[in-house]
Length: 540
Ligand SMILES: [Zn+2]
Image (cartoon, rainbow, N blue to C red; front, side, top):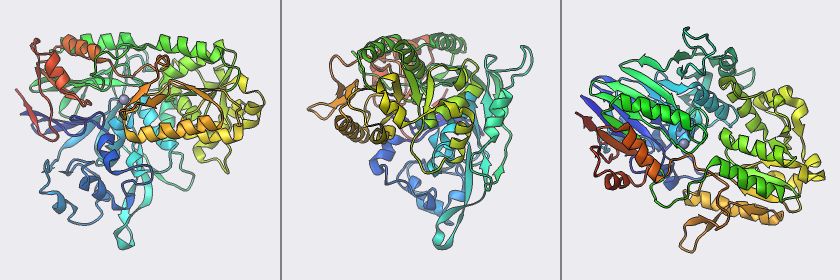
């Protein structure tokens, strides 16, 4: 019997955790952090306690109660599972051998951190490298231990603490012929630099690391129990991948997050054609944007608007966007070049860009990018990963004094989390371009409020920054649209994606509004099955 069970991602945006079962063979499609649920209980300073391992996460329903799926070292006491046996969705789940990860946004991969150490992660090389770079540059956080983790043991009082070496997770890098450095006809192989980066865990010389050599898988390959195909697609992060998994009921296709209006449209077209040719029994498709009448903003439009705005500004310009969004970085690089400014990124972004270069040949080295500089943040001491950036790119560093002396020469890539550096730069006016995702929840709303206070304090005007509406919702002020292009397909494109792939069954995930597909596909020979959390859909 073949069954699909959606946990995270059922009726909510993000946190995708989709179980595929074919007899005894089991696989997850993504295993993300379910932020919608997490935000009900937690915020910045109230987090799941690492010392209690799985307990908090299972109690609050952030992890589905699947005994046998998670790291044993995170069970804080014997008999932990007795507490959850009566829970809806509880079952013993053995035999999950892998998780395919669609991209490196945490709502798709964050909770891989909790899976048993022998569950293999299948992800594109770029996704793997980004996930590791994010972990390398963050303080130790048990919710973000993707590439490597520290085993925990019970200390006095039952509190779990890290002991012994860190262990790498088993990864299989999914490679297309394009990412491979092997000559055509030879088995695909990643660049040696990518492997060296994977092996370098920047935790200082005293931390031992148990290495697990990564595998590689070509575009037409097999994993235990399934044939697996992977297709590079377009989203607001490099390395985004869609999948097709062959089961005894037929192919199951999974879009991950996807759009057709970005610069990688060709990839998406190839994916749609290949997926259609498989005549899939089921399509697991995202549905983030289902409201009609949303404006379609393209990356070219973003470039045009930003360039115009920056040309009209004599003071400092700050651009706020996700650095993993390489397309947007390239846009601002062009804006900086065309307006005679240097583009300044944070050390963290420089580390990430440098890491991505090992996996993505098209990307030049930072020192080859004319006019690219790295912001020299005021800090007591560099951590290991920061030292590597400084040693490699010492001459690219620029400090607050230089920027303060001639703010009109720079375009700074900062986000809200870097905004405290304004105290050192002391801008007198200037422009802040908000080029990031729309406001999804109240938490983000408070950050926008704080950001606005910072901008007011230093006299920076903003463009594209969402405002509170009278009804409590958020909107971009009229006339300030077009500074951000979404990573997700708008409603009409989503329907086109589904119609082109033409599956027998459609299972909408990553959406608050699965009914959108029911309403709009009633005339198509496609059956829409709205998933309910933890309830298996059996495939004919
Ligand atoms: Zn995403």
